[in-house]
Image 1 (tube, rainbow, N blue to C red):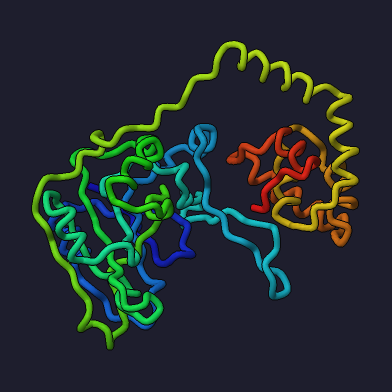
Image 2: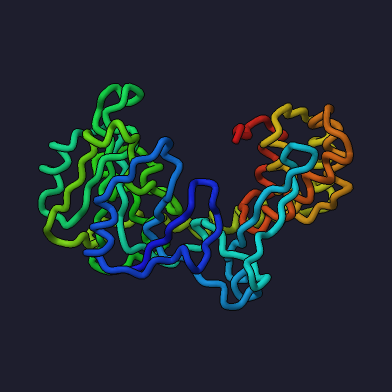
Length: 327
């Protein structure tokens, strides 16, 4: 099986040395050992195998995302990013869900929702390793149990299946915390403060390996022919020259006063084929405090984001109507 180890939560590069080809007995032992550390932001494991960067053009064309880091200027972060290069001057694969091939483990974060005793009884049929996490029984957790469970999968699970079966898995776990199954979620390896080692626990339960095919996928309803035809007609209307100009005119007099929305507008405009000059023009009405230089910088950032975004004309229209969400 293969898992991926990162230096900390800020590490977003899938380096060759991060990829760990291992066996379940070896990994189970590693996941059972606690390190004494002063802060929890230490080594982090993603229970997945990431795509490899054999051919950059094929990788990007098939939806792969390269690792980037933010550039600092005059002591502050800017909106400019640069691609992180390896020693061979090739970029790294990014730690993103888009780049995951398959999962070998199911990692579960239990943060006070149930006790260790309850979890051991609930999952006694299954093969897994459990270990307390950094916040176990701390005052911040109100003295409650905090731990992680690692279930080896009977067969590797393709990345798309994780998304399709996520709801069924959460129901089986007994959790409504969507983040515990976030697709590129990293889990810190077991650790605690030196003075709390006496409270650390780990255990290895032997049983059947988890069969991910036993979780029912969400079946997406197929739209009717009439609905498909209606959407196509609306799309044609949205793309007409008159409608496109009307959207620009309305955006120019729609103050949003919230930078993430302004940034999303830039991404949607890039994807819809608008020009940088169009975004600079509407910025004056949307974010009066922003200069033309700010708008051009945001546009360059939007060009990098556009390839992995689904924002489109519909988002721009929702902004105009005040129906956008602040995210």
